[in-house]
Length: 345
Image (cartoon, rainbow, N blue to C red; front, side, top):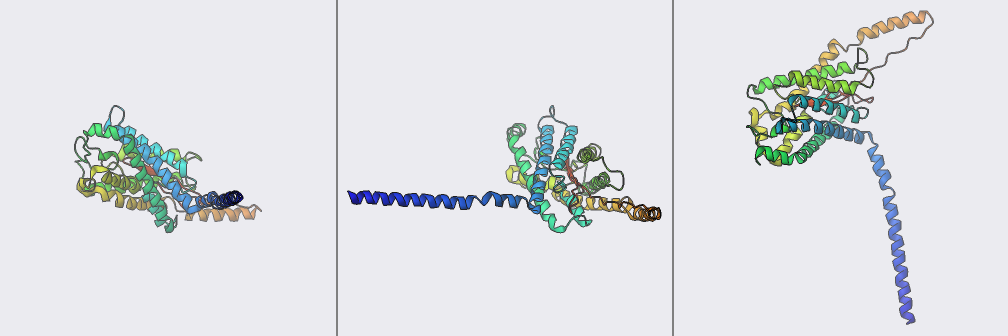
């Protein structure tokens, strides 16, 4: 009996030691986890990725949701509602990420920022990946929220064209009166207008939007573009707004027709907007944004004040914001880092 009691005591001791060791190991493993996660989330690249992901998600949820209302039930939605949805979706996106990444929400704006030397090219894939994933996730969200309405409207058939087409909720498609290359030209011009005006809104050397109003003014800009120029192509003016949701519809049941419809239109919202954004940025920098005369005048004024024993304050350089848009969608506002936003949608 004494041997049995001794054995039980030894077994209990081993179990207690094992439990203590497990607790010690658990503390050793768990204690560094949260600090490590926090440290990772504080890295600049990670913060910019998450900022683009979340700002694009917000913009696209509001924008695609407004399109769903127009397509599925015109008593609750309208084309004006789509423009407002995307416009103010951009405004909210800028508030989400404006001081972190510049809230580009638009791969065309990000491309122009890099091409114009306002942002390092190494950040380009980080921004675009965040935008694409945010847009794709937003499309999945809208599909889930409106799933029953989509099936009711379409009679259970997921169509790309025709009177019961629902693919247009997620991506842009050409109307019958448009051709592929006219649509290409439209996307170049509209994205150029977007980029040009965004640079004007944020140009501190000229007449920028009042402090704190850039997000609202950018949203109004996207709304105006849609109201005045969006009829021909749905004004995608943003690869991040069009391609990820289109890919979602491909895997969700609409099939390969989403890429073949409208004369294989799918590639135009991917290629034309970056070209337009770059051209719009060049036009602004050449004709409006040149600082050479101002710097020369500033040097003259400095020389005059020095003669009177005064010190002239140096001018500060301005950053370029971003924003997004299209089918109505839009894009972002600039940050105070080396990432210069241009626009987006």
